[in-house]
Image 1: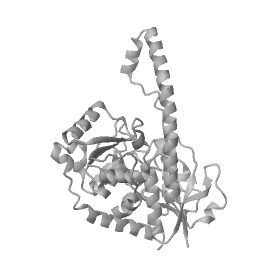
Image 2: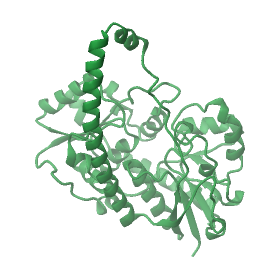
Image 3: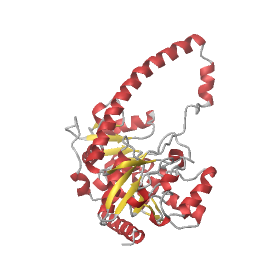
Image 4: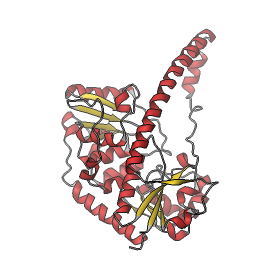
Length: 382
């Protein structure tokens, strides 16, 4: 049996990452391949935001007396110490849960790869390498790693399966490498229209825009691996899943929705709610499938709401610049499935919050799935 090696972000703390990895594996397996995910230990760092203090905050700090500053710093250090210790404990437990999910559902290699250490046997071990889906081409996360463009492999083995840039523009310092590496890809696809535009501008190539691999699996398939979360509410609930900050105004609006509709609020990714914070990827599926409404700024939050036909509201990610905006992925998703009405700015009353027409979605899914399988069969020479 022919073999495919997936190169993605191995993030054992991110729902979308684990679920797209599983989905990509299952899609490629359905085409008759033995599929493994290569452990990618390439270093990457998010930008340090410590220096992004606004001038207004600086001016306010200048007006505080030295005595007050010392008291505030002492209190802050004390609170941060206990908070960070607690966060570290919960985070480690959460990673353990995510690794257990990975061990159960994703085949990972017994070898790892980095820019400075590429095992000799890896190139001959697989007939093809697939990069994606996730934000493997996001320069703010990955710093332009050649591993994510499969440069270690022969050109005819390099295939992109709906990867994302995650941004609408690529910084100039990455243009030269991105142009070369994208030009050399055997199979070239992306997850959003903005990504296709980036590739066209850099290389002149037309990249196929595909749906995320998670959308390739049916509702029944996802529910078959779902798991009942611990301490899940017995009654109806509003689920929140925010990767960015949540403003007071947004919290107030969500609270009003819950109170007006007699819903309990369950906040994923908030450490103060231990059981929800500890929920694994399989539990996320159950949480979304039975929620009365999901409020989110997450791409995969929207994806699973669509798949599971759960009413949802999409918010812009807070505290992001236009250059680093990740909204392009969500814009393409909502446009593809004609669900722009789910943007928070388009919802005007309580009735519109819960009334979502999913009747047209299946036909679109069927067509997008055919398109994806057509692309994969072509680049895999099936």
